Image (cartoon, rainbow, N blue to C red; front, top):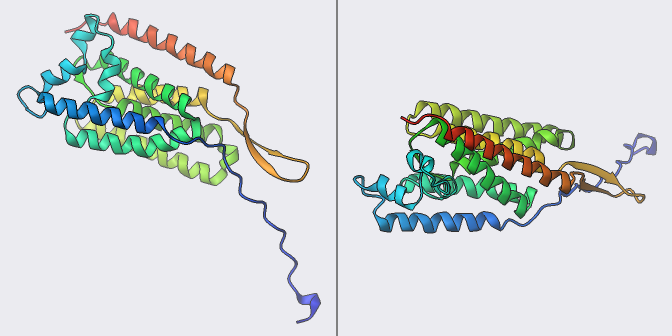
Length: 255
């Protein structure tokens, strides 16, 4: 081969950038709690159609008349109760898949805050507009969907086409769940929407905001530019917003 015809040398590609990820732990703890609570439900007779609703109420389901009477703790405990095996299996799988990724990206502390506050946001929305009995971790799970939407929107410049693809997938999943929820009367749509909006807001406030930094030797790394101080001030404001929303919900007349 003529040396003049040889192809030009290919420039070496930089090594792929690695995101600063955490090891998921909290999500497994949540799954264990949900599993143990479901066993307690079954031992208490929740599978019996005649007394299943009463068992859920006794164990802490979100039941509007009792919440309005002062049992505010139900807004939290309801998120760990489930109505039947299919319900707990579906939510458990969704939490396992979404929870691992979200905790790896956001870290354990931020993940726990997001899940619990998004679940509370969904429970408050359910209490305000459903006026009935509701239970399930889907409020917090919808919060994780909102969180990941915020993550890929905020870091769209770093992730490029891959980020846009993941964002479209998340939006599609959210839309499908909303449409399905509207078609099934038994589904707590207000709880789902409250959780989604809560997760979207918290996901934006606590989101790692990536920038690529190049060192003098040409190596690159991804760093998080989000301010921890600003993050937790934002969380405090969200807590205040939830309190105000709950007080407003208490003022809604109950039938």
